[in-house]
Length: 268
Image 1 (cartoon, rainbow, N blue to C red):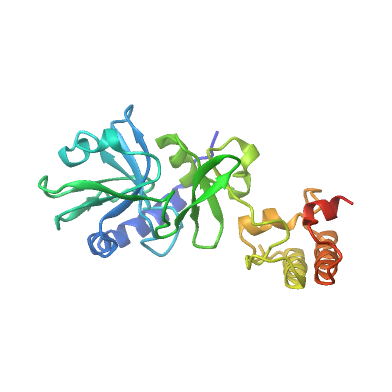
Image 2 (image 1 turned 60 degrees about the vertical axis):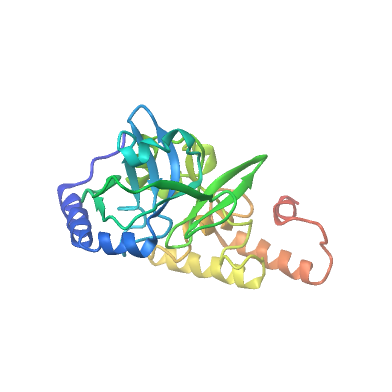
């Protein structure tokens, strides 16, 4: 069972959300009133959506996910058509109302005269921090957090799934095998500095991370990078991983390992 937040933490988070609430209307206009559809939830009579970019400084996910009531006339006319990954837009200039609560907030417009329409899909065209990734034979949504951690959002997630994700205490638990429908997508094996290649710079980052951890620093790699750093799969990030990355990069550079993946090289 998820631990309850302490009172002090709750007050601090609430204060943050209330302090940014005055900026929400400006954000809605700036964003173009576009939202990414996560799922339609008939049980809770709502459409679960997310803003396509991080609206505020602070926590990555707080104040980002919202519900739209299916019973609201504007949303009711389109609810049955919506699919996972759709991008929807409100057509007029009515002001957006957002409940100032921590976690998943409810949103509505101050007028029922507008039209909500589907204008695209994240699965076809990226928008903000959302794009698509193919896992096996399925195309899924991916969201990149402010620190660069990449999360996959599977289809048919529920309100409770998203709420649990927002209040997660340890993002390292959100790997695919954990059973969570929202999980961390690792970088390619060994690409611990997120530059889409494996070279000596990645080995240097691993060694720096080890040194920082040794003196009690939390390190600088994000969760996606941490998962990719354990190249030998022993459950720890240490000098052995850096040595493998450095050796692999050297042999790839000399043309000796054409077609050999880092995972296969590490298993030798």
